[in-house]
Length: 398
Image (cartoon, rainbow, N blue to C red):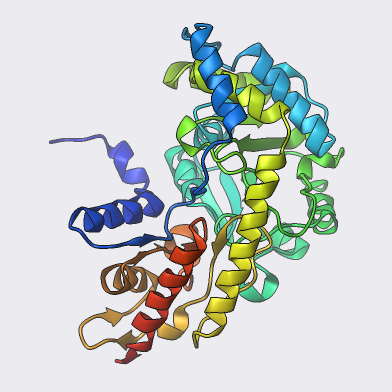
């Protein structure tokens, strides 16, 4: 079958592939502990579910405007003002079926063939693939555990070039959990001020899952706000992964461009989800804070468990719900059957021998590391890391 060459431009997300492999083992009756997918193991808060039920009863079951229902776009503006002290108009908001679609809309609206998109490593798996879909060029800025997986102003300046169109990053970061402070962002902003034609895509989907204090958006710096596109959504902070709703806040011309792109792909997002999202964004955030408190406890548990395993270098994540340790100590080892050459081999070894699913760091632009989620119960976290420890202890130099 002659399929389009379009499919050759990008790869399947490793996060989804590893989750599928885990499901296949479960279907065979094997007890697999999932540390691969980035999904809160909490239920959507009741007041949000009730808003959806009410929307169904009130027959909000028709097509929605491409950019989102007016009350939801206003609710996003309310949230941005309340939580981030940012002023946006409803027409600057575009609601999509998930933050991933919001990112795709922006990349397709901004990037032409051959233009460069600077992305610090590690990054979420889809960033680089969206740039490839748009025929752009990915320019990576490598970070290290020693730097807290954050870039320096000098690295940013060195990466800039005549073809640079976009800088794209997340804070808190998936997969590293790195969070840029206001002072660190200010240093990067000083560089962006030297390059007035470069746009900044700021993925803030993990905004609420921050263990270090209040979130700071790079859009809060007035000198560059007219070049910043904020990406956010409801999946992480409100435990609404299956509801599929993301949004962006952007300069008006970019918002209109994204609305045009979305109009030919999906049109408006699910009507019931949009009415539930209004409740999520305007109501009390107590359920979110309670969830984050539990994530914080799990983070401490995971870091303590990792301390007892030799050879793992694991920075403490400041946000999100992952650890992203350097596992290269185990490269070149074997259990007598499997040789661990790289992070991909290690992830497959842990899946097949320890029955714990993870995601190899190559997918995130960092081949020494492996991502493990702690969006799971404490009992499963303890059992999962016990299995990992035992599987690693069985390895010897090949």
